[in-house]
Length: 336
Image (cartoon, rainbow, N blue to C red; front, side):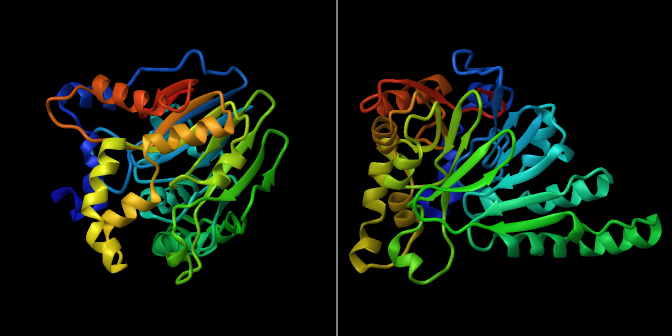
């Protein structure tokens, strides 16, 4: 299958014609029934997999709680998406990464460098699984030349190293990893990396739960069906979960057969075994007894003859085979 030349190509399957593109690029859709006055969830990027498109940005979401911002993932275009949402990236002091694939981290260096250049940056901690602290160090190394130039010719005295820090999180079952006066954050390891891969590398993938005064919001991160995520999401108000069209998931089974038979790795096997079909989403949501599901990191089969609305209806119908609550298909800049 041509789409398996790269995972990014698979993500482009959600581009479904000019009408759909227009709706995605400037979506005014908001879930009024799920919106809360106390906290606001904004989907900044809802694309599944790496790739640059004109319709969806790479994965990122932000929670606004009492005027404070909490960013979850930071894929390409996050910086611009924050500005589009009317938010100041200088107000960010905590970023939470689910894992270190580039479609979840590509704008970290841009975010930190622009915060520093503004001269108004708050101290910022980037939380995430093993490798996050090294990623933050690497981001500052990326803009080291810019730092040195501006120290010399602009008289700057504040060093990025005094503002920006990485925090590696090691979790298995649901564990509290952050708390302030507005939110309590728990994390759990999910199943984005198979056991055979974990034996060969120290990197992990996690999901997050944010408990606030008015509600709880859970982010699955990229994951296959995960009992850990089910435990983390118990009775949550909003479950933001990645979603892959069930029919496309079935197609991946054929594409991955050779790699599975030979016990080798391939992009098709990765997509098949480490991402959630809409059936998986429905099962996890039902078992966790969540109130609402928001589909995110979208990988959906489609073509130029399908409308955005028809694709979304298909995704919702698949989830509802298992889950009877509210199901929302995420769009960039959607507020919940």
